[in-house]
Length: 225
Image (tube, rainbow, N blue to C red):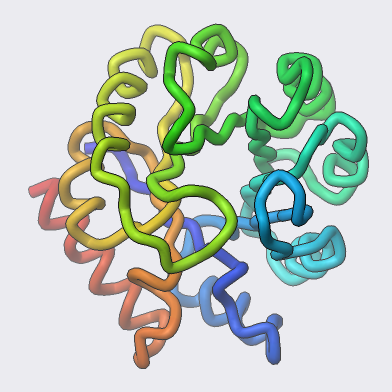
């Protein structure tokens, strides 16, 4: 089985001491930091900001995965590109843009890893052509905008469709939303490359990130064996 990437959903972190959170997640072996940017229009919530992104970028050398849940990201994409470095990722939602391939090309030209995020109600067929130009596909197993939502079971079929295309079209598939241990156990062997960890599995569990991550890694290792 491929190496599984684990990303921390930083909208769930304790912002009273963000530096401490980042250090402890690094010590626990997190692979990257997932940054949810929300504008209150594309989704009915405000989450992290450009300044949050910049702060976390200064605090760590680990990659950042920036998930833009904003309308018309082409209008502000340079602000995010200029705050990142090579090896970081930007995901956009195709529905939020008139010409999403233009926005994706700007991300590519800047040396940032291009990705798309797919909502539960978005069919694979509507994004098929974009699969050829992105490196990552972030599949939402819940509607975007809030942490702590319930998994939508019909999304499992969408993962299966995308996994069938990933080798020939050259992208990796990632899981975002309601990520419990059973989802990792089920979908990692099928080819899902990485999982965004939020309140379901990582944050607010009453034990250290080191202990929580050890349990997750040990479970993944047992799957591989």
